[in-house]
Length: 85
Image (cartoon, rainbow, N blue to C red):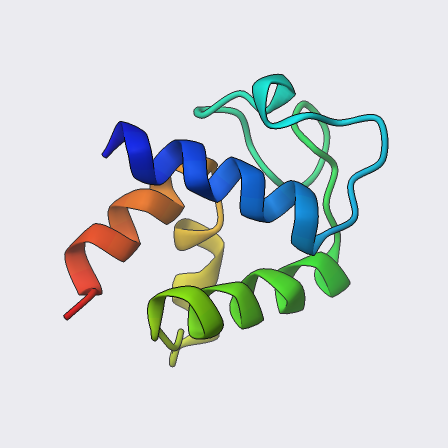
């Protein structure tokens, strides 16, 4: 799980072109969206969906699930672990 979390942080920085943010700066438990986290927006959510499809072969079918899945790096990693074939 920790290796997946590290990989996700690198992929998020690269996919979202997060300037002035390194993978080490991303708190595994912090919210990705809104205040208190990375402050991502809906465009970033689309990039994360593409990242999940491209790197992990996963598709988020229910947008309502997305809010829980995309809450933090840890919730993303848990979703990947639970759903990857």
